[in-house]
Length: 80
Image (cartoon, rainbow, N blue to C red; front, top):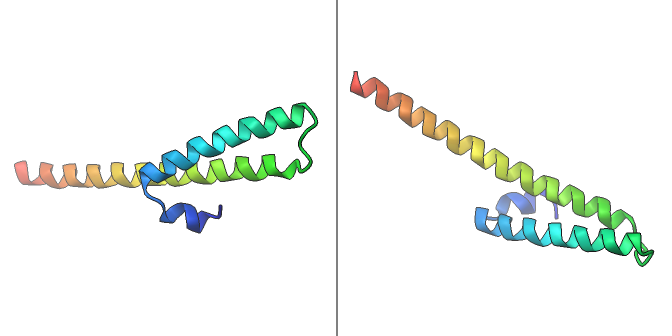
């Protein structure tokens, strides 16, 4: 999953994708430990996808905080 695809998803969809990829990563690690995994690059790809999802979620959180603080700052100016 590329970053463009991740950015197109809504927050609830991102949460589901994050949960699915974390579960997949756990399964990949078990398969790697038992020597049933033929392509070890899948672990790296899954970890990077999880990182992309977490990055987008954090970006959205920061934007929401900034929008909230900007709104609060404009309200403070109106109160005085």
